[in-house]
Amino acid sequence: MKQLKPGSPLERLWNGLIKENPTFVLMLGMCPTLAVTTGAINGLGMGLSTTAVLVMSNVMISLLRKIIPGGVRMPAYIVIVASFVTIIEMLLHAYVTPVYDSLGIFIPLIVVNCIILGRAEAYASKNGVVSSLFDGLGMGLGFTAALTIIGLVRELLGAGTAFSVRVMPDSFTPISIFILAPGAFFVLAVLTALQNKFKAPSATNQGEGTGLACGGDCAHCHGSCGAANHEAVVREREEKAAAEAAKKEAAKEAAKAAALAKAAASNAASAPVSVGTTTTTTKEDMNHE
Image 1: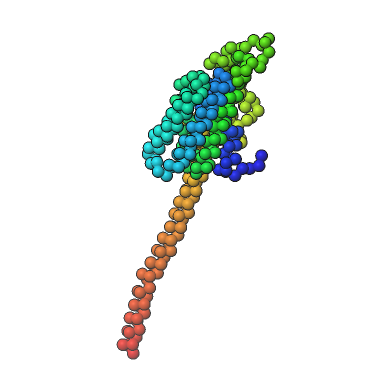
Image 2: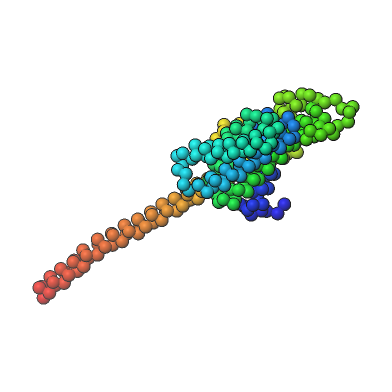
């Protein structure tokens, strides 16, 4: 695929949907992924709700990024996200009651979804409004697609339906475990195993070309690398390296300037003595004569 311009709307969409899909690549937001994907409609509803919150919170945080003090940024982000989640919850309750009833407690829990807070800290707080908007949209659509796919697989195998429409033949016997909690783990494990089998980039698949700053070795991760924030990690490393290089260059220039100043001072100190000696000798010669 042609290299996309970093920060462009299309690059942000591609990044969230494919390159850094929050579920299949970064393995974030696992609680709602496993809990609400008993059906495709539930997965679609949760994904779209999260997308709406992501887009609105990213835009608001990007607008306020130069106003919010660094020491209270996380509480400020949570207040902003909670405000938008409350709006989404009220709209679902008023207009999409079946989805609201199905998602239950997981709607208010969107507030602490690590995808939303991760994008707020890693991207929206450091970039412009348009880029942040499309970053939230891409991540949200990637999350929606992942939840819908997992929910569709579970619904097909566990109930023989797709989006509550019967699609399997009457002879099909539903495997009810797939619409229970163990089915969520099983489906996600199979999808992750397929990613590893085909060497697709993911948080569990270490290797060259993963695109993750941490290398993707979750088995030995202590949580310090921040795979979700890999862009910020890479940028921070580059800025740190540039700062170190600039510091070394400045020290070298300062040492050079100090050496030149010392040499100039030494020459200036010795110059009058030389002149005075010459003058004295001349007077003595004249008196002698």
